[in-house]
Length: 355
Ligand SMILES: [Zn+2]
Image 1 (cartoon, rainbow, N blue to C red):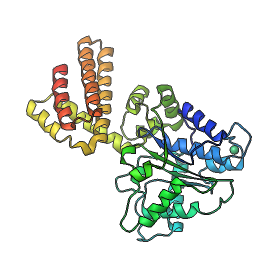
Image 2: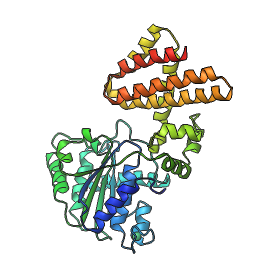
Image 3: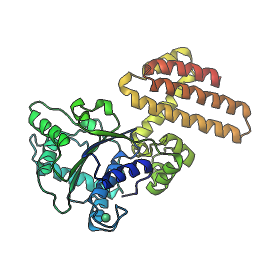
Image 4: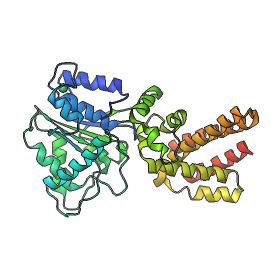
């Protein structure tokens, strides 16, 4: 697994709480998508399992080695998966599926794309967690459960018993058991879950931390094969403190395509701008919309740079005015404005700036 980048202050806080025996048994790590919340959870799990000398995790003991290879039998990591074909899978079926998925992630150095729309954390998984939590640890002094993208826990008809058992697990975990949930959408988390965990907010990474991640993860090389942007400055801007988002190539490609379409519409006539704004879709596509705006910033910065190196001050000025218009649109979009209205206003401003 590649190392954990950033989050030094949170690591320090969690480590000090663990040393004092004051770490809440049920934690929720939340913050923007792609900043490494599950990686922080894995680091914390390793620290809790490590029995080597301080400072922990020592990186050398058997527990550390298993945890870093994602094969520790007392580290249970679940995240959204496609629904299993068997309508009533057992805990063994569930963990076999996660075993394969985690092996894939391990092979990719712990890097993975955001879950697809059809992936969820289904009730069979919840049941498997609850069952395992009642057992003694296999080899370590404790066991740790990580539930990534926990807002994807699906409530299901007739599953009250498992759901209630999970709530009880969060409320009163057995001795030597930690549960760490992560989410980028804490508002979408079931309120019954949210009220039973201590929330810790994680922030976006600083640019030097993103740069270190980019170097270690070789993201640029992955993107090179797909005609996606790969210059260092461009990637920093696209990552916007959340480099994990660059791992979802499909989403990144879609955002670039949408941004190119918006730019084309801005320089077309008013009817075309209205049409482009209309297809920008509803509030449901909010995440996609803000990704498209990030990509638009990248395209306009590229224009500015090209104009500067061609000594075309006029074009450079126009492109940088367009960048400002996109920044205003981002602020409006973050404030819950309707994407269609934001887009229409933005396209008008872009037209005026680039004319
Ligand atoms: Zn260790």
